Image 1: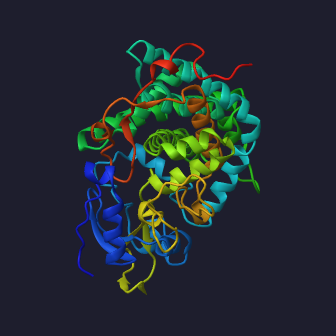
Image 2: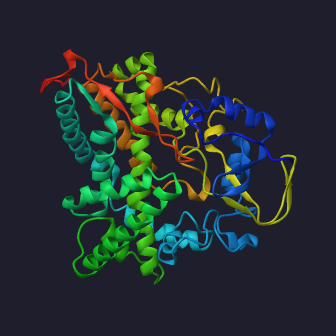
Image 3: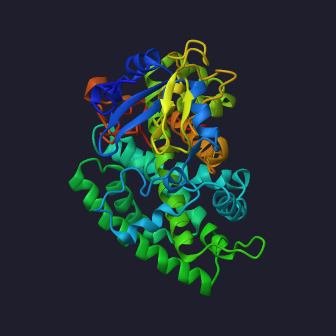
Length: 422
């Protein structure tokens, strides 16, 4: 198949990816594309093909060595050896290593019940909404949701879950900002220095937890054991980093795009305001409709095969294009309609197969609580700039905002505005 030229990086695509996704699906369930920094690869564009790539472990491998390749996609000569430890996690390994790593991490992660955490999540959401309101009152009713709520709230949650000191959260915020905003070669290089600092810090925290175990997932990871096996030092570092970074970045964009789409669809916002039992359904519809994670990590073809009318060769890269699969009309009725009551909603926003996101229940609960807390307190919230002036992340594969300026209408401001009476 000839190489297809699809723009997956422009701001125009970030604002409205649906026409591009429709053209890709029309070109075929699996199409040949060229991606910056990665090169030529196959993209699974339909729901059926994407699910196949996510679930067929016999045909598609996550580790390139299982498909006759030496390096991961994008791992160039310039990647410092000290950072390659980060590839030793459950998201980049095949069976049986994946099962071993995931079972140990689940053992640690599941010590914290999402239901037990809910009161704390509500309290943290309220604290950061206080900050958001204070920032708005200091600037004529306008404040950036990303800076004052969508970023710090999930970061505080994951830090508490891991058992990290509260005084270190500002440090993590700087690290996370550098990583999530990296798109140019220079910003990626700067981000690598931040990763090194973060890895040094996590090593220190692992050492502290070995000496004096404390509540939280890091201590639980250190203590986790199954069939006489524990996580190695490199595996502990990789997993702690993955949980800290991936555990909050996805939720950041989910909260922001959830708010944005409710503001863009006032009928759906009113529906939610009158029935908060739809909160988790609204989160799932945001995951489907927006697809903040637009495509998966690459899989590698284990053996030559004819699939979906194309010839796949051993060692070639294949991406599951989640953003396109989630608006495939063969799977979803009126897929480009934002419907918070959509049922069933078998979206791929958290991936699929054995590598489905471990923290999907926590991310869903966090976002549902964030939406309810925000719109209960500020029901008249509105965008502070025209839609076309919103700044989108330039990073390929992620659909989210650099900032989301919102305005509290005059009747919605004040220390008790929008809150229910006790």
